Amino acid sequence: MDNLYQYLLTGLSNGAIYALIGFGFAIIHNATGIINFAQGEFVMLGGMLALFFLVFCGFPLAPSIILSILIATVVGIIFERLAIRPLKNAKPIRLIIITIGASIFIRGAAMLIWGKDTHALPAFSGNDPLYIAGATIMPQHLWIFAVTILVIFSSRLFFNHTIIGKAMRACAYNAQAASLVGIDVRIMVMLSFSISAAIGSLAGIIIAPLTMTSYDVGIMLGLKGFCAVIIGGMSSGLGTVMGGLLLGLLEALGAGFISAGYKDAIAFIILLLILFFRPEGLFGKKETERV
Image 1: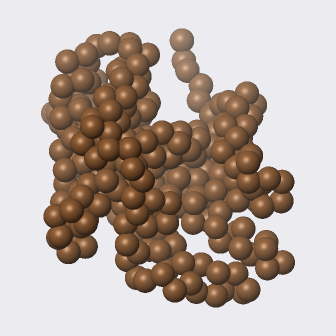
Image 2: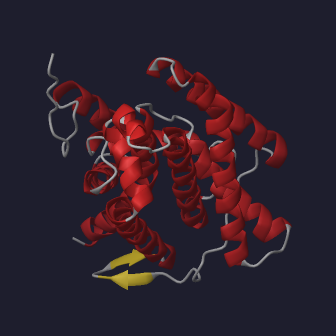
């Protein structure tokens, strides 16, 4: 039972990270209809930029985090302006290929700037483990849970109770109708990329003390965030959270009771099963199209 509790805590912590990354995928998809496969690189940028400001520049932790998120957000805006907006009438598959190219470019630039070494951020609240029901948990895991809950609550307030959030939702439902009532769709798309980049970089910062960071960590984290949002049904709400937590739990239980060597494979097996048997996701609704 002690091992089970340990696997559950680990799985929930990893699942919270996958949910945060999945939020970024869902926000951009709902606003533009494309899958941004560069999302994992914003996770990497968050961790590497925080490390740069904290360790190499000697800034305190809070300013390092704020500057990292701001710079990653600016990169997201530049990406949208230079790569996505000029091809606004392109087919989604072309835009998806562009996001893959942007991912390779950002990853290569990070390798040239920071090298191939792996680094770790210092833990926010020390390294002394906490004991819960016979299982151990690091204080950094509590930060992960707290940040995830805060992002979920803030995004719900933003999209449901602010003018800009409602405008972004309107663009997601029908961009043409939104533009007819005076909503600038281009601004909403840019905001979706900036919010997605900010959330991704925040996820990269809070996970870096546990998993360490390097120029290529965004590949696997981005793919697992994509799995989480597919499980959740491409929703930016509770479905994505449930998808991320479910993925994290199944990963941890599979690694614990079967083999740690299958940890990453489990995520992709789940993704394939979902795409085969329920492509709208476990928590999504089937859509009908009138012709």
